[in-house]
Image 1 (cartoon, rainbow, N blue to C red):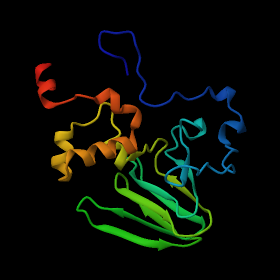
Image 2: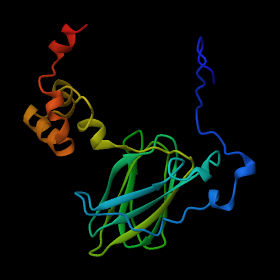
Image 3: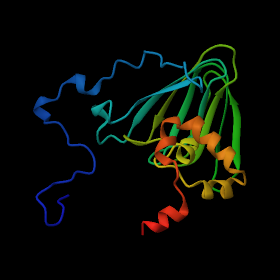
Amino acid sequence: MRVMGSSVVVVNGRLCKNPNDVTINDFLYKRFNVPGDTNNAQGANATLVDINQFPGVNTQGVAMVRVDFAPYGLNTPHLHPRGSEIFAVVEGTMYAGFVTSSYKLYDTILKKGDVIVFPQSLIHFQLNLGKTDALAYASFGSQNPGRVNVADSVFATTPHILDNVLTKGFQVDEMVIEQLHSQFSAENISVNTGRSILKLLSQT
């Protein structure tokens, strides 16, 4: 697509490689056997293989993810705005579920070999119930499904959403909101100091 009044060409997607330069290696990805680092607060790590890591999926409408779980690790509530997901347990026992747009929860216990579908754009999660590591693989119906973490989208924005909005929306006091901000985005606190509705109005 060409921008009006400009010589700049903007492409929504990725350009294809010259067919004369294509080899079998363009269709292979050989690093999915490496476990993700689960040494973090959630005890889980999602290794995504989409168009950004694997150009071979360009125009194919597919992507994959490897999800490693430490004991009792959690793949936090999140959604994929551009693709549905089919999730398969390779090792371990997990509690998993998703929430519909009418706030109905569908949840279940998954064991080795079980498969579940998470519809596009619905919030979902997985929790390792075991005392040992767990592993799952998932596929997406998009080469670039995206991921939006629920907590981060509220408490880790840059700049922060105004406390007036969050205190009223969650029906808690400002101290609780500040504590949540510090948990999810400590590096952003100084950036947002002093933000208020009055200050925003004065800038208009």
